[in-house]
Every structure is written in C-alpha cells, then in structure tokens.
Image (cartoon, rainbow, N blue to C red):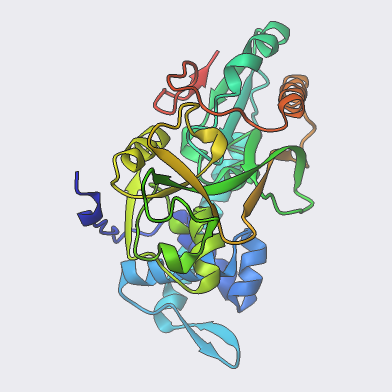
Length: 327
C-alpha cells in the first residue's frame, strides 16, 4: 500500500464552513477577528480561505490598510453566502423548536473515543430506559459547531473556548504523542519538533487540516507543512500502518492498544501537546435529567481513573463504523 503516493483532489463545491468564513471576514475585516467569532485559530481560517479560493479559482479578499476587503468575486459570493446561511439557520430553528425529550444526541472530537461508553451505558439506561442514545458520527470533527447549531445535545471534545453560549464540565487531560514504529530514527528521541517531522510520511485522520492538532499546534505555529500527508479514516488503520512502517501518526497514549508490539511514542515539541477533554452543552438550554445523569457518570468514571484507559487489543462495544446508535 503506497499511501505516500495518494493525492486528494478537492472538489469545486464549497462547504458551509466556507460560507461562514466569508461572511465572518466580510463583517470583521480580519482573520483574527473572524477567528474569535468562529472559534477557530487564525492559521486555520487562513488555510480555509486559501482552500475556498483554490476550489473556485478566484481571489475573494485583498488586503488594504491592514483590512481584508472583498474583491468583485467575493462580493458576489457574499450575497449567496448570506442567503445560504440564513436559510440554514431558519431550517435549524424549525427543528430546534420541536426537540425530542426521548433522545440524547452525542458526538466527540474523534471517531474512536467511545471505549468509556459501554461501562456507563448500563447504569444510564437503567435510570432512563425510555431515552435513546444516538451517536452522531457526522458531527465528529466539529462537535461544538453542531452543538451550537442544535444538532447535538452533548459534545465531548478538547480545549473548549470559554464563551457564554457553552457550558462545560471538565473530564480529564491527555497528551498528543508521535507514534512511530520500533527502530524508527525518532524512536529514541526525548521529543521531536515540527522541522524534524517535515520529511516524514504523516498519517492523519481524514479530516480538514484545521481540525487536526498536529497541524494547528505543531506545524503551523512554526510556519511549516509536512511534505507527505496520507489521510486514513480509522484509528485502527492508523495504528496498523504505523506498525507496518508506512509512516508516523499523532495519537494520545490511551488510544493505543495495551500491547505496544512494534510501536513507540515520542513527545511532540519540547513542552508537549496537552489537551483538556470536557463534556459540553448549550448554556441556553437547561440540562434534562437524562443529560445531567449521563454527564455525572462521565465525571465519576474519569475522576476515578484520572484519564481514559488504553485501548484493548481487541475491544468490543461501540465501534466507529456502527450506524451511530446505542440503545
């Protein structure tokens, strides 16, 4: 499998995130201000803007006196963007006006962060047998946006920005590590830097780069990009490809199997990449009894063990390729 030869060609069609970006930059006049509005870093928005312009083949903004101003093409696109965003907001408002009290919708910041679910599911279902727990896989990489849009009731994710619209309960901390095969040149290092990773074949989740910590917290702060990137859809596949010597990846220790045969972890950057996981809900909506109890069980589980446990070599339970429901 020659993953280092795979190239992904972006489709020409824009996504909703691009429309939100264009409207935010047009309203604020800068990427820095838009980043605060959209809860993304300036670097992430810069890459997102470049992505939109490459898909369309036109320049959308030009810089004048330290402000980003729309070009002619940008002005035309902004009209469509505002119309699309308005229609989406209206559709979401209609759905939110009729919530389901017998449904708890959950998503996380990673496809395979569900090893903790089976142990608490029994207790939760015993207390609330008529409530369905639904895992919304489509919201995996942008759980906060889905939460604020009314598509989720609970998001489990890292490094949540403090803002009035979000209510969060701290769960645990982890550290993102570089995972390399045994015998790799970097395996014996105390830590590795972005510059030392540029020439490696980097295996990542199949998600936009602005949603991946290895880019936003390791490469982009140094103004660097890896030379080879191979997107992989599942954690299990990432691990086995690293074990087979195809490339390197970035994962926390607890996502790795208990038996580390053929794998070695190295700290990323001298200070490490620490992350705080939280259970997040919308502050504007009172937590229901099923939601409150679910968060209570999460807090108890993670406070007892301090962090998530390493993955078993063959784990049963909720898997990322399920249809997204547990009852």
